Image (cartoon, rainbow over all chains, first blue to last red; front, side):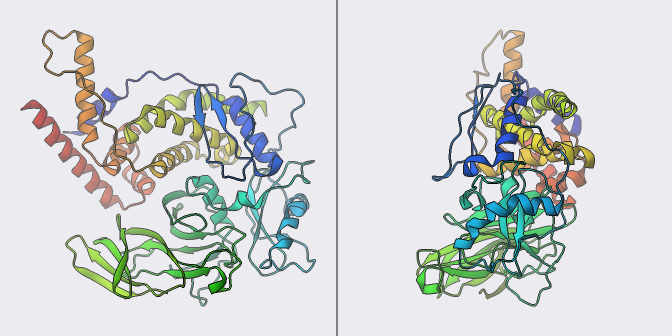
Length: 335
Length: 162
């Protein structure tokens, strides 16, 4: 089959009639919701042209009334703010939202002002990270002017595995390391300028129950491994590390929850997570604990991504990298 | 502001059918493809200014569409109910349906990655480098995926002809 024949075959299948929906009212409604971040992290359902779109509202989310596809914006709607906001303006608008972080012991505040961490361009509705002093960044959804006092639930910043756009925003605000995939190694220098991954591509997502989401992201030139955790988890925040270089190594980070690990997150459990690039002949990874395989991870084009949650105390995981024939390529011990 | 919305509407009108059809070719489900196309455009609207300034609207739309379809489900392509291929004296319309069903059956035999690769390369006319970036693999792997997919299609069509 040559190139022209494959083109012809693809066009033979695409003959389904398509009716263009009027997307603008729904797009405007979404923009208003994002800007207001009103009503505390509304994850709304939108009815567009008879199709039901959902962004997986969590149990604590508020579900807003669906706008009619044919509705038009009223004159009373707030005017749009199209230009990027200054750091000072973002800090002013976010200050009320950040009060919620005072209740969390892992956010050191001591009355110091919150400062925007990165020099990226931000607009109303974007998630932005702020710090009061060297500690994990707190998140804020930049509210529209006049809406600053409206509360935003911290649940809005819990990573959602099915929402690539949210993951890209959270990972953009994460502490960034380079050039190793070993994000737990303290000697890896911090990328002080951060990495703007908001226009990146989510290559893969891994999770094991709610909470931590491991994301593999590609931007214009590099591959990044991001561990996204809810801000309510006392795990020193989300991190992102460069993972461009292929290594015959499975670098896993290990963290625990529950009283057994002196964590404020309820439920004793251990988590191992990581993502990266292995040599191209790698086909799968075996993770084992005390000689028992606990997880097999498929490797696609050298790329892997995993989160393993084990109840109780954290234990060491051993790893083996195998090729398609089952031959061992590398082995080692994880965290 | 009106200008921004006008631009978006104009873009959405010409892009929606293409996104739907591309999405369908990737996932094999019209409903999911339409949902993903709508969600793609809604997300694009929120970042319109930034993307337009960067000249990356099409690239963002393609990436978002693929992210939505690949992340939402790893289910295999749905096998559609086929019309009876042995029906004699078929009308031109019936011939068209039969041709389409053959194509559907051929594409259903590919892996999602192979289908996505073909869609990017031969339906959206992406370069090998763009395809590699969107698939998150090397250009060499794009060539391998393409040749594997074409070989699989050849096998399917040979079986159909036999």
